[in-house]
Length: 197
Image (cartoon, rainbow, N blue to C red; front, side, top):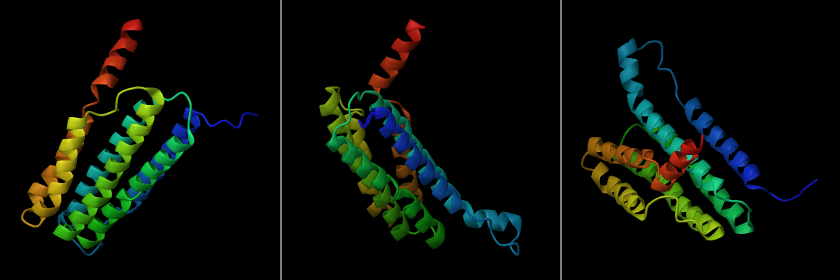
């Protein structure tokens, strides 16, 4: 029996943690009380549904990109294990930020806390990208321009939320839209695989 940790085992563990993160978020969605008319109840939980959808997309984007990034790794190092665990830890804070908004409502403070919970995985993702890049001699998984724009949007959401929650939400959504477009390297590799089939 081999005691060597493979990239497949690390990816499987990460997939499990990410599945739990998504499950925890959906458990916070509560049906409004029976004494409220349907449309009033739906309007009351609409901010939570919007934040949940945004959180789901963000976690999903990390999961997809994690898959592509770990696909480059042939051998796991101790540093890579810890960088991956730190990334998973920070990603697990997103349900906390989502629940805070769900229970406290869409306020500038709640949105600021949510943004911090979303920005921490972005920082740990950059660290994980650097560790994997050094391990595989491959370029970074995401473009530095995308990372700079994302960081600026995350930082900008906090002061903007105190002036306009709608604009702050659009800025948050823009980060997700930005990362829905896969990195150029992933597109090239996918096209190359399809051309061989």
